[in-house]
Every structure is written in C-alpha cells, then in structure tokens.
Image 1 (cartoon, rainbow, N blue to C red):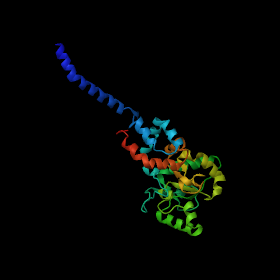
Image 2: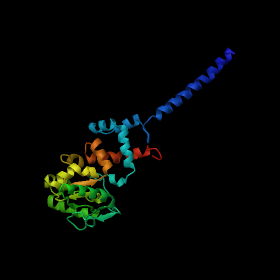
Image 3: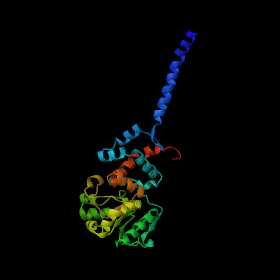
Length: 274
C-alpha cells in the first residue's frame, strides 16, 4: 500500500503543482488596476513609461485609477473632439462637420454674419458667455469654422504679407488648421493685446470650466508650432480640460498627442460593456 501511494504521488504531484502554477499565473494576470480595463500594473507602467516628459509621467503614474476613470469617459465622447490637428497631422480637404450652426442665430456677439461652430458645443459656449457677462465681460467671436479652401486663402494672404517663414509661425496651412474642426474660436481682437483685455483675462481663468482650452500658450511655440495666440480656444469638453490641467501641465498639445498615440490601446483593453 505504501508503494502504491508513493507511485500515485510521483504521478499526480507534478500535475497538481502544474495546475497550481497555472491558477496562480491566471490570478496574477487578472490583477487589473481598474475594474473596467484589462490592464495590469506592469502594462500600465510600460505604456506610460513611453512618455518623455517626467512631470507628466509622474503625475499619471501616481493616480492610475483616476487616470483610467477619465480615459474611460473620453472614449465614450465624440472622438473628433480630440483629433490631433497640427503641423504634422492634417484633416482631409473634404472634412466638414455636419452640424454647423451660425452664431448670430444664438445672439452671440460676432464680427461676421457667417461665423459658425458645431451645434454640439453650443450649450457650453452659451453657458460660458453668460457667465462672463455676469462679470461685465463680453467676449466677441472674431473667427470660428473655416473650410479647407478658406484656410488656403488665409494662409496665402499671410505668406504674401509676412513671408513664408513667419507665416508658418502664425498661420496654419490648409488642412492643418484647428478651425476646420468647427470647435475652435478666435476671440476679438485677434492680436497680442487680447491677453490684457477683460475678455482675455477672464477666458484664461475660466474657459476650461466650460470645455475650452487655449491651443497655443505663451512660450510653447517649440511644442505647438505656433506663436502665442491668447485669443485661440479649442473646445475639447470639460472632461478633457480637467485631464489637461491635472495630468498634462495645462498644455493642450501634450494631451492631444498622448491621446492620438494611445486611444486605440485603451479602447482595446477596455472591458466589453464598460
């Protein structure tokens, strides 16, 4: 009988150890850091480790669950809110939002009768303007949606006026303008003096609360590709502006580049039904 048990132990013990190892590995592999993502700590650290800016990297790694909470929300929103449109990434010449509305129809102060934006941003835009008005500030829209063809004319004008090199610092080439998205607004005056105006100061402090983000901040031309434009705001939504402020040093371009490069990864590993 003793020999029998020894034989059984020799046969089954390795298999039991093997099954135990499999179960242990499975438990480890399912030790996800967020209930709605199939992402382990090592996967998350590796992905975030690709970020070159140490401050951004540290901010995200210190709050992985909150960061993924915010990413999950963004993945449910219209993805064209986060399209990367800059000197290296262009929209097709045929790109045109299908929900454009004229601002004058909403009694927004404008410098031109045809200024239009996407209807989907109107609630937040009107709420922002209403709030500004309570502080005796009256923002005026000087430019909004621009088609590919219109931007081509704008760019050609500045090349003729400023020369190619300076024009490329101040004006986007056709297809590379955020204005083509229909979610970007230039406030009046389109001039550096806007920063010191009542509207400029108010928007800088409050626009993010309504989903609008300054696209080209001061001293970031090497990152954005454009000179400081205190009048130029792009709507990305309130969830994104909160993320930009908390994790991306308040710089829209850093966030848009990250989202452009990583949204597919997070979408792939988001659990079905989440």
